[in-house]
Length: 294
Ligand code: ADP
Image 1 (cartoon, helix red, strand yellow):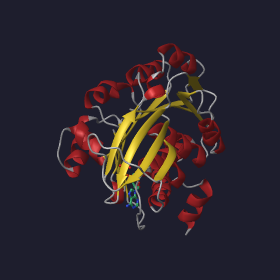
Image 2 (spheres, rainbow, N blue to C red; image 1 turned 90 degrees about the vertical axis):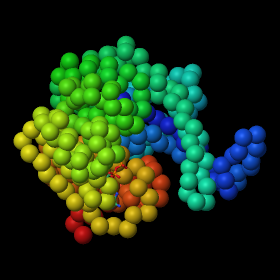
Image 3 (spheres, rainbow, N blue to C red; image 1 turned 120 degrees about the vertical axis):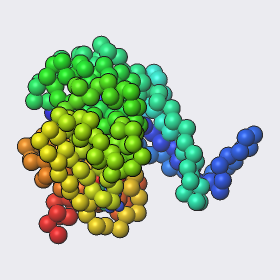
């Protein structure tokens, strides 16, 4: 089982001619409310890939529809708390030029208590994994608490906090970063420099570094491996990373070799980028299997 200590967001998207200016009140006739957050997206991807996934998080008690939605994708939501605190959300203004302006309110995503973390982890076994992103509170505490119980940790430090990430790396089994996070972590300015510096900095850590349309690079103490991205015509790369993480991790946990797991993740995320949307663009297991055969 994977315990994903992850964010759940309700994103409110407004299509506008221009961003609201100081003092201005503007009507928007285009509105969408979407379920997201890196945590929820990764849980959905894991579930669709066939993994046993328990999401650990929190929402406001009036947003139960979120639980039904995640459950319909195969996510176990029994560890999602219902609080009297707003569900995490983003207010997104989108212009015709595809520029965005975002207010992010973490809300219930920042209400994980240490007590709860321990009570969840006390039920985990050493065959289980803890997965984290950086959109919840107590990230460092959770990682250390999991590690001290022999529960392996996969960490996707997004949004990147360099100091926090460096401090928890000794307790992480698998680090998953995109090229921008990799450059930040390595303190370098180019992708090539990051690809060179990170394996030198962390020779014993298993790292998956996603490279957008270039694919993904894996390295650990024993060597490195690159898998190219599939050639598709990309429409919207939102949730590509989350899809990659979900499918790759699911394959690894089911005993697949790293190269095969990476192929699986690349295939799933290649399908994801051909579709507009976030959670809704994560493919099903059947779609990924068909894609790989074709
Ligand atoms: P993030 O969304 O976190 O920035 P990336 O952009 O690196 O992550 O994308 C994650 C994975 O999605 C890549 O490793 C790749 O397999 C796949 N991917 C992303 N963009 C494309 C693309 N244009 N064509 C095909 N695959 C892509």
